[in-house]
Length: 397
Length: 132
Image (cartoon, rainbow over all chains, first blue to last red):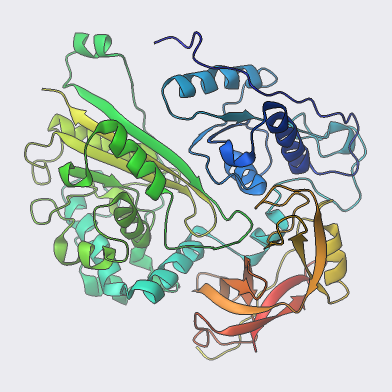
């Protein structure tokens, strides 16, 4: 597939300012976006793909999509190649459009090097506004309150319990299931099988999350090779192919209708399932991001493995244990017991799904005839702003 | 468990768009941003409305009252337990904050709270909320 003729440049705008002592960098991004959308005859609500370089303030694309209130963005890219980034973005946007991943892509650049808020372009030179910063637009209203992953996910668990009656016992079952798997993994950081009582009796970290509701902190790494069907078939490894993928940020968008019990999986999941042409009921093995027990529970609901609010019942009584329950999950022990390298668990989610599809998981946790698997992740915090990503893989026989 | 929670708060990052908010905070006034085009209030304050994208946004003084949407008491803290949470303001938007003047076991979702300003280390005061 080529991008030739698959993508059109419908709107452009060069911001008229050359010296902006009176505007933030985020504002310049938004004003530029407004200009290009107006030029095209489109609105912010039409934008479903967003591209910016790594120098953008805050949490990259997510902070900017949130600031600009673009509620329909389902594809993001923050590739950084310096000044050429925006031409790379044009190429990547065309690829995304050609693949049907988005239909209106917005690319923005902004910065204020003359005014000390020069991102991108460094802070050197210029006139720094006295006492003022020009970083992430949300900075002055969030980080000051001592939010960490623990207590921002704690807020999600607290609200989920309030809305749906979810219990600490039900959350504990997620850790119990992970520990049953980790006991067979020689590399697992925590290899001991734990009970519901062990979780409930561990010390409270961020109410209602106990120590054992939290993932491990580990050094480490991982890597993945993705290749063409032709190259894959020339190799001596089992054939595992990607058949569907989706992604979406979930943000606060001005604080209207805040909902901390739902994740971006409600968008990334259906997109991935639709592309793959399968349903949650078809999945044999699930890698589900497990920074905390509540992370797993919310994502399982949002991916459609059970109804919203019924995640507590679904995960209880060993339903996530391989060979015991209906949805074997994180058979390497997951982030909760095995590994959460550099506090980023997405790559280990892919790796264990590939092991399962190849039939190379530990025999004690290998799912029989595992020919269809999902890997789903959440980055950032479910309690503040996050990016959800879903991938569906199958074994080709 | 019954001690009243408090937490030292670092200076907030203030930028050109949010300076009026923190200037008002120094005078014990709580401002929110509202959009003249769509009529909606939003949080955190921006020049361009995140809901309808108009740049016709204005500052509005608010009594700073609302209800607790959710919270979590953080025990992994060298300065003692503290509560982070979200308040849904009477004007509509929800905002992140700390809850103060309350014991760790004294909070409930749905509880009515009101803003007060807490001094920060070397910066303007910031909004925190206490039960009414």
